[in-house]
Image (cartoon, rainbow, N blue to C red; front, top):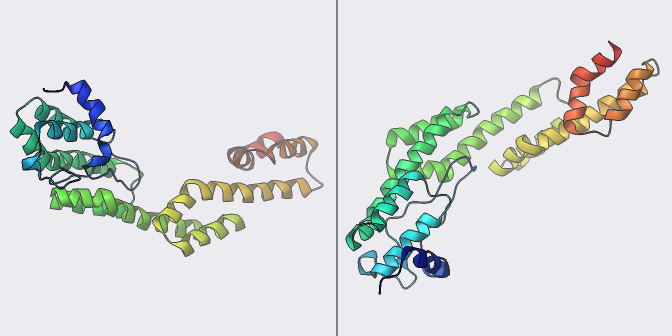
Length: 247
């Protein structure tokens, strides 16, 4: 008896541990990244050519259920499910890989068009598009992007260290990130550590303002109010607010 597609979706979830499809993986979370596979087979090692019709359907439905599957993969998977048994086999053997390459190509073009992408990322993304094989595209998204981003992050942190306006807290935390020197540590500093270290330095700067006995009552009141504030409030006060108070 043939199961309905809805029933097979439930079955796909129940049989998920028994089917060996490669798991999604991506460096920075900016693009979908379900890994392409040459074949998909159950845990007993049965080749795709020997899988039953229902096993084929469940394998494809698992791909459709993956929220990281891109438009190309979803389109080709649905076409395979609506086709013959051989269409499903062909999708798992070659169509999935090619559809994933299509989605990967779109993801890399988006990275290239992102104004925040640095030189290293753009260079390596361009190389992947020039080679233009499914393997090269996937390798960039799974490992090359992360490493190229780390290269750009390292440059950005060195610039922060060389900025004469960077305070002690910022320089200390930037130095720590460079000493650890992993892609994760570099990114963590730029995404969160820099902001917190800047807030530490800004709080010290506000405390120095408060230590000045010659400031006006209005400035003192404003500084006392902001010193325990958020990083954004501290920065705004030092860049704009203190001058508005005395103005």
